[in-house]
Image (cartoon, rainbow over all chains, first blue to last red; front, side):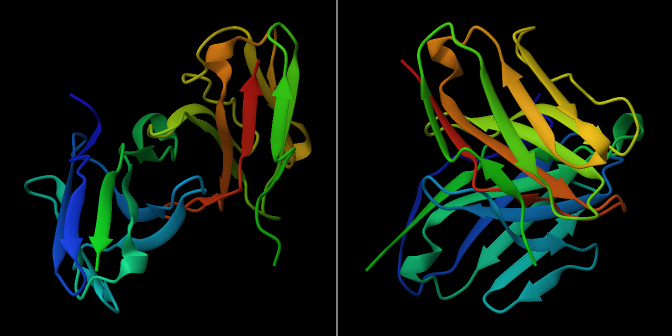
Length: 112
Length: 114
């Protein structure tokens, strides 16, 4: 089993739609979680951290479910510019190292 | 402030040659990571430096790959006797030493082996 798993998609949605991605992680001791966004042929950029109580940043909401070991990202009122690959990132804190583990990404395509 | 800087942006070289890729992390960031990403694929972890600790080299695909980080700042990733399968974008990221801090990526070096 991979340490971090994501549905690769693609998720094809119309503008204005609400879309949600889940990401599961295998290490129950994982302490920190992030969502990154990667545009085609660009480097990953931090979208938002994920806090235990859940957090919101504009149209984006991130949630953590420790019992089921998954995090989610909800995008409301999708824009064309939201089209990208969304990477789930987990810090398992194993072996004393802060090595972030990246999922393979979920591709989102927003169409007019 | 300055972000993570990588050079060169693009590198084209012949099979069998050695290449050196450079990463200049954000000032004060003690952790530095190297990844590579082939077209349409996810990030592949290569190596991780944290302060003065021994690096985590568990992701290096072969002994042709090596990396060093001098003075806790600039890092160099070296690929010896390059092969065509080494063609990829090589990404460097840095982060502060504190737990729960995210990584910040450079623009990457696009390596093409002919």
